[in-house]
Image 1 (cartoon, rainbow, N blue to C red):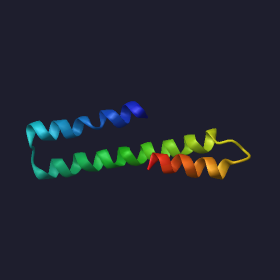
Image 2 (tube, helix red, strand yellow; image 1 turned 180 degrees about the horizontal axis):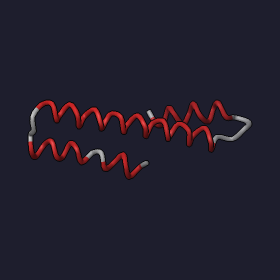
Image 3 (cartoon, rainbow, N blue to C red; image 1 turned 45 degrees about the vertical axis):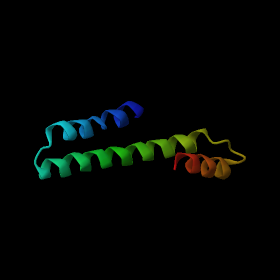
Length: 68
């Protein structure tokens, strides 16, 4: 997921160098935002998985605070 998230940043490099039509800009930004949403969902599931049983809510809250 980390690799996929960072590879999506290449869209912005492509946009900076080529300056394509506006519809392509909208499409690439939408794909990037969708990838960011998937990354956040995967990270949240990972945090839930690794949180200790006794203080699960506290660990999750602190971890999402750091994430934000």
